[in-house]
Image 1 (cartoon, helix red, strand yellow):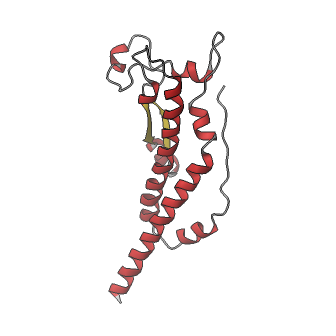
Image 2: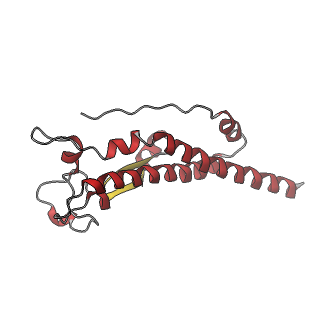
Length: 165
């Protein structure tokens, strides 16, 4: 049911060379910041797509519940940095409507039915195209911010090295 998305990054030789000169903590902080910026770009595109599908007669708004979140579980298990872009409230249960009342967009558990369709309604994807159509832009955003963070870290390390000399 779920489509897999695979991609590869080309032309990262300069970035990999800079990574060798930077400590783990700097890699982590700069990488997390850059990855968040890329996830925010995907989140914004998903919100745009969902806003087009929004029913103005309904109190629920899928676009208002789309968020990006740090994937701490992935980091704890593998040490890899990761952000998730998704709809708050997830699938939820059937009798828990008061739990979803506090969400900015209301109870939007039906987003999966809109995204993937049912036997009686056609699919109107808004999350998957946000990623597939903007993968290059998100990668460029990540590289731009990460390279800036690494340049700052290298400059800071060189200043500290000169101060010790």
